[in-house]
Amino acid sequence: MKRVKVKTYYNIVLPSLPLLITPFKGSLSKFPDENQSFQCNFMTRGLEKDETHCINSNPKIDSSSSYIKQFWVGLMDGDGTITMDENKPSCCSRPRMIISLNNTEKNRIMLNFIQKEIGGKVRIERKDKYVTWVIVSRKDIKTALFIFNQYPLLTTRKRCKLEFMKQCIKDRSVNFYLQKRDLKYDKQPEMIALLNNSFIRPDYFPAWLSGFIEAEGSFSIYSFKDQIKPKAFTIGQNNDLYLLEAIKSYFDSHHKIFKIVKKNLDYYRIDMYGPKIRQNIHNHFLANPLLGHKLESYKKWIKN
Image (tube, rainbow, N blue to C red; front, side, top):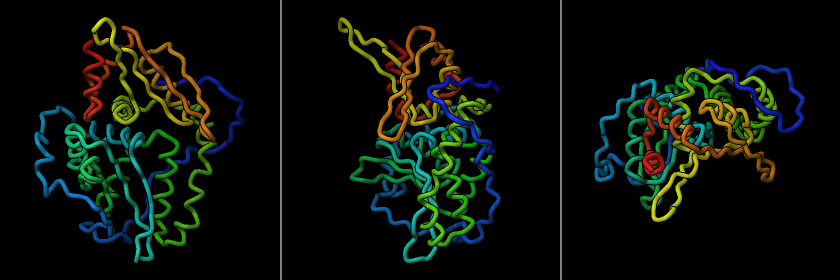
C-alpha cells in the first residue's frame, strides 16, 4: 500500500484521535425477521413485475464477487445514501441504504449485479426516470455492514453516516435517532484533518475507484474540424482532499488540484488529460471495468 502525501491548503491543528470507523459488532436481533423488510412505501413499479426493463440483464462480465463488492463500496461513497428515518407507526427507527440513478439499460444491469451479490430490491420509479436499488431487510443490512467491515468506505461524510446507522441499530428508539441525527457530522473535520496527513490507499482501491468514478467521474470531449477529440477526465469531491491526492497519485498525474469554496464546503477538483494519462486510465479500466452507464461516455472518450 502506498502512503499518499497531501499538500497543505490551509493551516489545521491535528487532533489526537483514532480513526472513527469501528467494525459493527452490535446485535441485529431487534430487527424484523430476516426474511421481512422494514415497512417502506415505494410508489414505484418493480422490475420483477416488468421484465421489459431487464432486457439483456445478464451480460457476460468477468467480474468476481469481491470485485462487485469493492466496486459497490466506491459507488456508495459517490452516489449512495445511508440513512435512518422514523418507521411510522412503529416506535423504532429504520435503516436503509439506497442508490438511485438515471434509468438506463447499463445502470439497470449494474444494479441487478449488486442486487444479486448483496441483496435488496431494484425498482423503476418517478415516472420511469430513475432506477433505484434499496436494502431495508435485516438480512441485507447485515450483509452490507459485513462488506463495509471488509472494505471500509473512504469518504468522511459516508463514514459519518454509517457510524450513525450503527449507533441507531444498537438503540433503535426514535428518541435516540431524533436526539443524535444532527450530531452525526460533528467529528468529520477531525477525520478530514487526520486523513489528509495519513491516508494510505487500501489494496481494494482500484475496484473502489472504478465504482467511485461511475458515480463522480466525468469524461469530456470536444469537436475539432468535424472530429471528436478527448478533452479531460475530471473528478471532484467535497472536503476530502486526501482522496483527490490519492487518485492523482494512482494515475501518476502532474495536474493541479483546484480548490473551490462553496458555502461551508471546500470542493476539490482535478482535470487530467494527455496521452500518458489516457493510457493509464485505459490500463486501469482493463483490469477494473466500469459496470454502469458511465461506460458509454468513457468509450467515446477513449476511442478518439
